[in-house]
Amino acid sequence: MKAVFKFLRYATDHKGLIFLNFIFNLVYIVFQLVTLLMIMPVLKFLFSKDQAPSEIKSGGIDMGSWFTGLYHDFMQWFALMVKGEPVKALMLLCIALVVLTLLKNVARYLAMNFMVLIRNYSVRKMRVNIYEKCLQLPVAYFNEEKKGDLLSRMSNDMKEIEFALMVSLEALYFQPLNIIIFLIALVALSPKLTLYILIFLPVTALVIGLVGRSLRKKSIKNQMLIGKIMSAFEETIGGIRIIKAFNATSFFGKRYRAEDHEYTRNNIGVQRRYDLSSPLSETIAIMVSAALLWLGGNMVFRKELDPEFFLTYFAIFSQLIPPFKGFSSALYASQKGMASLERIQELVSAPVVVQDPERPKTPSFTDSIAFKNVFFSYTENPVIEDVSLEVKRGQTIALVGPSGAGKTTLTDLVARFYDVKKGGIFMDGVDIRDFRQDDLRKLIGIVSQESVLFNDTIRNNIAIGNTNATEQEIMAAAKAAHAHEFILASENGYDTNVGERGSKLSGGQRQRISIARALLKNPEILILDEATSALDSQSEKAVQAALEVLMEHRTSFIIAHRLSTVQHADKIVVMDQGRIAEIGTHEELMGKNGLYAGLIKLQKL
Image (cartoon, rainbow, N blue to C red; front, top):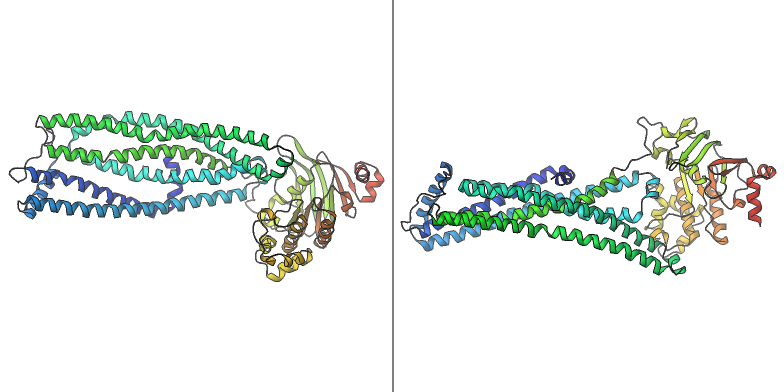
């Protein structure tokens, strides 16, 4: 039941809908019970020789004056209505059955309608929470987790949770309510017979619990395996050109088949356990029914029980079997859904390492950015070690050095994608950790090597950093980025869809749209991370011209492997193994004949 209550936490915002669902379910059950209870007095009237109420025999058990009184009142009213005519009695019974069935099904429909609203609103809330959590999580989280597995959590796991949430609500409200009301009716009719039924409950609970725990373990593994399959598929689609170029289709096919085989084998185990719930609960119910028939039948033979009374009792008991099966199936489904919920909870409860301060300061950049004895590491091994550097407002700083030297990491620390482990980065003397992340990033624009465009129009991709921008401002940014001409020449101009990740555009076009985006944001600090390294000579020339416009009057950090593009920087910082190896202008560093000069010579070869 713990699994059921965990799901219900997501439905607590909709107490009004839950209450309405409960009320209409209650109405449905009451009408259903009344329909069944009508059988006994009607049968008594139809088949009794004296056509008058008589004492109800219930195995020597006193049913209580309230039930006996109800019985006699109803029989007197019924006798008055039919006036001793069996055909009229049968007609009234048929009309009553139709009316009661109609009313109870209307109530059930309304209850299910409210359940649909509860389920969809609750799952929508969960999806939005997951998405917003993903936006809050640090960049490092997405470097460590597989994209396919995250997509699987958002799709497959959410489907499992949606179903489990529905059956959990049914398990807590409808099925137990159904069982309890019918049990009360059975106890009122015959406590002795009902006692025999209740003896079987502990055995039933034990069997269901054992199967449920086994199902949950298998389901956790199942969702993990389907996440691996999604990751493999996503990876294959992203790298299909390389896979084909290196004739690696058989290798990747073999690897995928192995992962899919493991998932299929585990999924068969999950389905077998889940499918066991209904026949298992039905078998137990039939065993109880057989015992009830034996006991009740013998009481009828001994004339301790009226036949019509026992038929009514057994009819009511038979209505316990569907909710009992439904309750056990719901428990199994909630156990299966718990595996998905745990995977979702892992994501939702993942720590947000980079936090906003409780009392944030407003960032102001009028003087300088200072790195003071900065240390940083992703795991145990340091990536940045004891870096101290001052960057004056308006300066252009080039970060160069071998791959893995820590250049990109250093600029990521400026944008607070990560926080430093030791030391600090200060803007006008204030630690940037004292600023809200959003406030700090308003000052920063980034153009990276891989232009990240979204499956939307060119206009919307440019306006991401400034959604309130006018058409004139967007076009001005595109013109400054040397993108206006090719945009107008495209199919729908600024309303042209760029495709997934900008697949409908060339590399140079994507990069110029990224530059237009940065220009529209109008940041005070600019980070250019290998912004032209992936372009051909013609595209690079156009992009470089756009970058020069972008860098005017801004503080710029340029990360470059092509050193010819950074020789005019105010400072060139040479990184090596996370430390600053050299610092100075191009001429000063060439005069030192150190690491920078060596890199220049290598590129001239």
